[in-house]
Length: 330
Image (cartoon, rainbow, N blue to C red; front, side, top):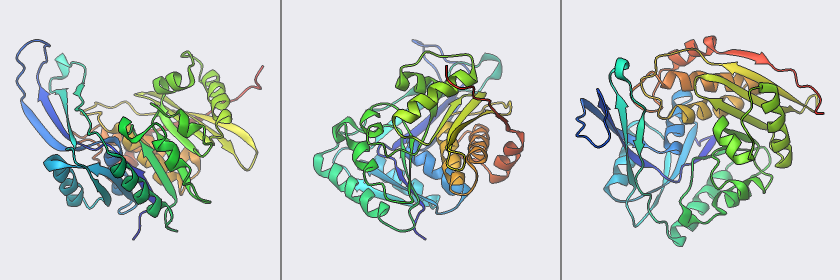
């Protein structure tokens, strides 16, 4: 079965998580346990999407060296479809430091390795691979997830956006260097967090969900985006979408359940994967509800983007959806 979702996950990594009782910068810190797996926003997105619906998402990625071999074999073990563009330089390694002691919990710290420099030939091979997948009749969405190597050129995502065909969505979970892609007018759905939106839209943070929704509408209208979803950690999320039926904007505030977080890495990617997987089936606010449920479920696992579907279903029942009244702009 060909994948319905083509995931552009240009920068995978080997992800090592070290669990410590305490962490003191400048001192010797000894780990109590560790976990090694694959990482990268696109790869975690694909893991989550295929947990919800097996075989639904294929990730296109640059991989090189023994670290790239590890990523490939790890995806194979989980039956996650992937298309690989070999690189001369090795896939990066990232390390995350996490707390094991709830009473002395310290901020999650992530050390992100240097990504490989991608050659022009490798970039073109990646683009052609995505192009061939988008052309398939089964492909219903392209997900641009996370950043891309600077060596691929500033128009990397914009070129992929322009591959959009009738009946297929362009879904974006990214914000750095996004302006060229936004200016194509091809993006249908944008899912980022509220801090990222404030930076992307050059807006000051606001306390009113309705006011934020108005800012989102202005931004979305400028770039012909149909739906914008903003997460905010454990705080209420915001969804704004333009209805084809009523030809008007609608907005909802969604509250996630309070949970004890084990590992939040990949929660945003999992939320995005759940949202896009379900938006191909359900009304947009229900799809985002499923996405938040999946993201919450993933926080209960030490492994990024790993969760049980049953846990997601339980979380779905605990996510509340409240329509917002949008007053006419003054």
